[in-house]
Length: 169
Image (tube, rainbow, N blue to C red):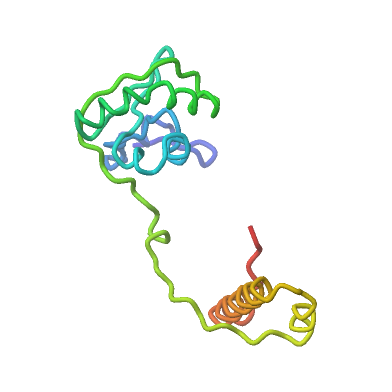
């Protein structure tokens, strides 16, 4: 029986009781976030190679095939330069061939929303747009403004009545 003192329970008793507690089966130990890797090497390479660990200046990378490993080894200097520019102390690369799984994207990234209809522009906006001499630029700005207002109206109608408006990032 666990002895409780002051509303707290001993850690050992908690672990013994909680048989569902276990270490995660997979732990992401990549030496950098995927976004940084993708920014350094480009999305085409990032889809076919993953950094595994950084050890004494050597970045170990898994490549999808021996052809990719060879290609990346020829690009090694450019890749290490990009990685060092992002603050990683990489001096060389070492490749191994293995399965490269696609990156797990958050569910909201896979959501496709249809674009709402363009909203009519207020008189003040149309008046200011009339001052732009270039017709192509004027039309592009008007279209962007109408779409933006359409998004705002769609968001406002989807939000509960008493909810505050979203804070821009």
